[in-house]
Image (cartoon, rainbow, N blue to C red; front, side):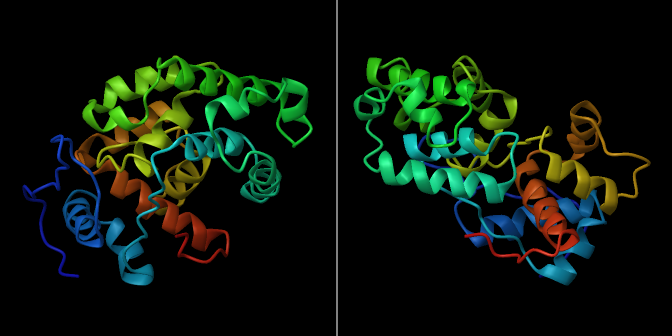
Amino acid sequence: MAIGKARALPLTFDAKKFPVIETDADIATGAEFLVGREPCFEKVIAVHGLPSSRRVENCLASLLKIVTEQLISLKAADAIWRRIETRLHTFEPREILKFSVEDLQSLGLTRAKARSFQAIAMAIDSGELNLESLHEVPDQEILGKLIALPGIGTWTADIYLLTALGRADACPAGDLALQIAAQDLFAMDGRPTPKVFLERAETWKPWRSVAARLLWSHYRVLKGLSQRVN
């Protein structure tokens, strides 16, 4: 991929005119822009190539999976999620609401996450939350809608914005892996706090979600993990 100086580059827009990452070409465009702003990113691309899209379906199951992954290792989350998929395979809100908090806990969820599952299902069933309509909503409004639900914090909302809705400028600054990768790649004195991370990421706009993908790619090699995640 040719890497040049930072310049204005077009974003892909979906039908509702919000900037999204749809293709590998979009990632390449964002990466070229970012290298112009943050030359260290070129090292990641040179060694590992462009990162994967990390896109998932915009649906209830995806949101619940992200909630499951909060504050635990991916290995533990995968084991819990396999049990959840077996029991809640339809992922219809009313089916989920048939399960008590204790039932959900028996699948490996904490009590707080089990309550969050119920709250999310109830919000969708009542019409308070319409995931399909989020494509029509600006980033900050989406974050506000999601964070308003019990058990959903900034990290979960940011990850959903990036992976399920594909927004080009999502920035999950509270993600531990991103912080560790940034500390190493940019030779920072310590692991950056979310505030420090956001300050560093200010010049990455409007491609912060591509920066996150590049940092995740760097993190995976730091931990000896394979690069392709989807």
